[in-house]
View 1 (cartoon, rainbow, N blue to C red):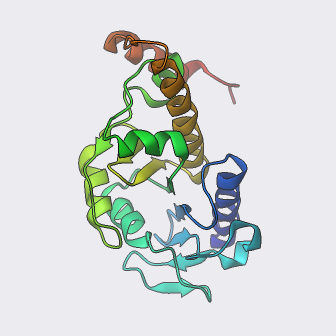
View 2 (view 1 turned 90 degrees about the vertical axis):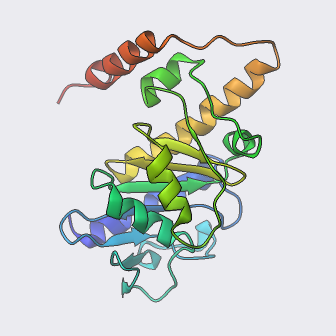
Length: 216
């Protein structure tokens, strides 16, 4: 994959966030890591989504130095870089403050597996990470420490972070987090919910990963 192709993918991933209702104004960001060079492509800081172009995506190295681009990278770049440095399986990452999922983060509550959609997509609960100061590596450290095998985590009093083997996978996880958080929130207004047993979660997740979609 060329860096220009990755730039296009990251641009399209960022554009998906407002379309899916996951961000407001300039909040949130998507990044992707190039497996060949190790360079990271990330959203520029403080630029409105409707004003962005593919060439505005900033290419940085794993030390945070700008390799290509005229704009400053996202203020969350240190978080993304820490994850890429410590999770070699991750090639896409998303951060949002989507309403329902962030409400769980504000309430300091993980999201248990109440829905088959959660079992399929996440293979377990969406964990809650502790409060972290913004602007350095603290969130990345907490994410790596607490996310486990999940593709998503809530950071206390902050928001949502998702990871994946591609930009598209990380964006999909961010969309799904908000979708299940909304459903769980409304369902909890109706009464107590019962978690799906772990063995059934494991079975459903395995079946989803191996049997869902079209064979290639």
